[in-house]
Amino acid sequence: MWPTFAFILAASAILLHLWWSACYRGVRKEKLQREQEIARLEEQGKRTAAHGEAQQQALFNSMIEGVLLVDADGRIQLANQALDRLMGSTHEIRGKTIIEAFRLHQLSELIEQVVSRGQVLDFDLELHGTNARSLQVNAAAITDNEGRIDGVILVFHDRSRLKQLEATRKEFVANVSHELRTPLSIIKGYVETLIDGAKDDPTVSGRFLKTILKHTDRLNYLIEDLLTISELESGRSVLNLEQVDVKAVTVQVLEDLQSRADEKQMLLKNDVPIGTVVTADADRLQQVLFNLLDNSIKYGRVGGHAQVSARLLEDKKIEICVRDDGPGIPSEALARVFERFYRVDGARSRKEGGTGLGLSIVKHIVQAHGGEIWAKSDLGQGASFHFTLLPRQS
Ligand code: ADP
Image (tube, rainbow, N blue to C red; front, side):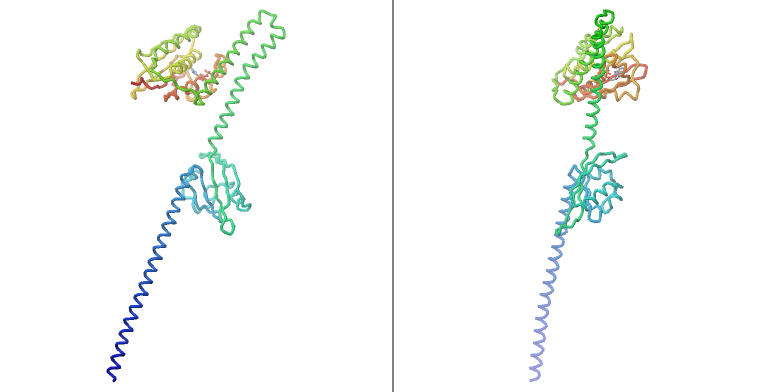
């Protein structure tokens, strides 16, 4: 009886052990699988989050506007590349406060206002110093699911160029008004004097009428130059490109200016080599040479000379040069003479009938041809104007 009982007991124990081991292995396997699944999901979640964050960052970085995200504690959570560029930040600003990152109290106050009022605010921000800019900032509060303010998003628009254009436009209008007013008031003065009786005095009336004519001409030149500038700047003028013989165009311009040169006993020379051909709009090239030579005569010395020459450059472009032996241009004014209404000697220019727009027109035309223009001068030794044009196209 005992051996049988002991045998049954041992067998049961073995079976129980086997069953338990099987169950335990099953449970362990299940646990392991669950753990693996959790790890996989966590990994996938991390990857998705990282991917989402990278996508968000790429999106922000592709924007022209600067974007800044600040959390409820006023610490920067995100800043895109445009913002770093606009603010000139070179270090990591994430985690810092606005004051720590930019030292801009106005910006910090704007954020506080957005948080307290919970509404969108616009603000003009002027940056000074080396990174001077005019920025427009739009700020809006970000809320969580329960409507609590969670942070602030700020979008920065760079208005510097617009402001600069606006300033240039205002300056231009002021200059034009001034240029128009001067000859008009002179004309008005002489007309009034004539009406008041000078018309009956033949010794002065002729002189007065000549002066009126001179200032009317000045107004005319000014309006013509303004129209040319406006046409060139609007991009409306189309270049009629053709193969142009530079020597032949120079002959024409020298002929047109000969009587003016004679008045100053100036010698005009055409040193352009025969066969110099450029790809250009012939009328525009003529206008460039006319303006440059006209200046050589206006500002050159009595009895002096002016000369046009040309040479082939290494890069196959043609450099054309107009040179005189007059008083020249001070070095600090060399780059500025191409600006609208810039004159080295205003009184002299006006006396000569100058509008202050001649070189600006010349620069526009040369640049429209894809060329460059520059001036050189040794004070007292004369001035030379150089510009490049494309050669003959085969
Ligand atoms: P303006 O109508 O006054 O001549 P420009 O634009 O043609 O206007 O020239 C700008 C200024 O550059 C002139 O007022 C003059 O002071 C200077 N300038 C131009 N050409 C010469 C030159 N050949 N020699 C000396 N000064 C010159």
